[in-house]
Image (spheres, rainbow, N blue to C red):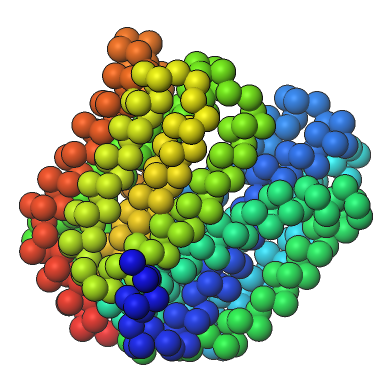
Length: 418
């Protein structure tokens, strides 16, 4: 099938053109306070216990809903409600990276930790406003493809700030590497000026109390609000369980080497990019509900590939098949899921509601690890992966039960109160 034949001419606009670079800028700082920072600390000879403490730097990404109401409430005096915040936070992220580059991990670990925490906080804030801008700027029929393009930019940024930064650091050193990435963030502010102002500009909350309480009150005042929450929690839950111990299964149980798994995971990233892009294009034709059902079913079925792998034992061909299929379908499901979350946000409270709903979805990823380990010990790997397929089914049922409300919500979001 020719995917480009599915590409609507209406998608050739500035709103969608900026999604990829903005997604790239959103993803760039993440690795610089996580895996890449750990590599820098290790090279500098920082002890393992200190490196372990540095992992707490990532907390702002899970707690960002706490200050999202501030971004909904306050409107900068330049570039409008969303783009003004985008400019401020992006400039501050670039400055924070410069501060990290000027600090020695060996001699000033506490100061570096403080700067890394600051960058993580600013980067999480950048994610809040980027999510809000994407939701406000895209038309309902553009959201699936727009989300897919955004995800691709985000994941490529993770490669640049991860593997790319490691290779550059070998040549020019870590401080210069961080300065180069800070310069990239600074140069990226030009994209903000090129980004169009959202066509639907809602009035900001009048008080901070309204910014905190009104998003929750508005959401739970909707008919079937709990049903929407059920979809959010359950839709990616099977994926969360299947991926929670995947690396341990491939290396510890089947005996693949770290290099083999790393290579196939690299193929998986490419498959995710293709899946997200293809899923976004297909959504333009199929619509949100049909896409959620179809992509969700494919996500669930992809988990059965690991059942085959567990039965067959160490098989490189089955490994590639299972990883590629899982990532293609996962990318498709992610595009549909992000479009769903965008459709559920009231334009007055986009930043807060998107942050809250995405945090609810993340609970599955955070808490799946321990129950997964218990299940594997109880039933074995093949049965465990079959159960992840079963766990995915309630999400499909929830989408089916809420299909009319999801369709109505998608159409209503274009005409939400300003």
